[in-house]
Image 1 (cartoon, rainbow, N blue to C red):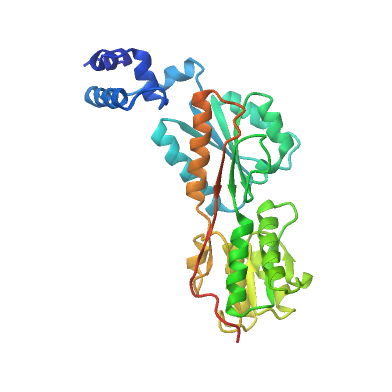
Image 2: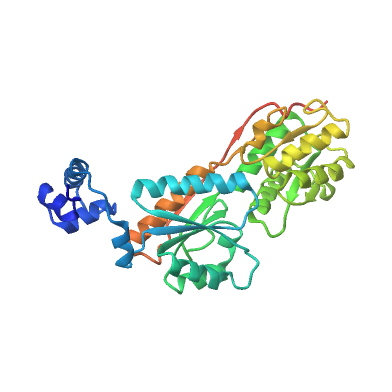
Length: 337
């Protein structure tokens, strides 16, 4: 049998082929009644959109997820969230790891956008924090959505999905303080990592609100990795904390392991909490009390935002959406001995 065309769908539905195209491309300018009728005819005819033809028409139907992050759990969750939204709306995803420190990263991304028919870009930290890079892309008519740490968008340069690390860290620190801990180590300070800085800000604010000093000896800098978690814990234990607040669950898992090697029971001798609610939080024993960071939902929201911009041909949108984060209470923290 002859393969059905968009004109066959239009004829059966009693609409123009442009209306069918709008339905296929998930455009908002179609009534629910017409959309339902067209989708019913698409299903009846088993019509499949010709993506090759879309490429030939130079109509971008792909978006790019650009990252520089060693955390595989974060990357996979973000990737899955974006893909879920792309599949709902008939778009494709290009995954592009890069070196955020490269002086050529802007040119690299522009070349990637041009060679892959990409209509929009989702930037994650630290790339999303680079205003010069974002401006460079915007000046070349790229549609950019940034995922950033913060209680609100820092500016109107480009659309933002912002995650309230400050508020979440404050909640976690308050939780430890309410248990009775006053000497708490903070692991994972990183001066160029906005998420780390936000979490440190929330940690400090909670201590200050209780009239407690912030001991610089208990703020340990390092990477967001298991091995760094072990090394930072060895340093922290020199100052006898009763609790450890790790900047992510991978650090916290390293802290649990190192604490045991050093002769400490968790949580009987030292409480340890994490951040993100990654697989590390339930792969260690005891399971970690942590902050739930819904990376899948954050990524899906970013994808929906950039797809909307692509469909509306809106380069200079300043749309924002925020995520507040909640605690997940498990077994790794208790009252100090």
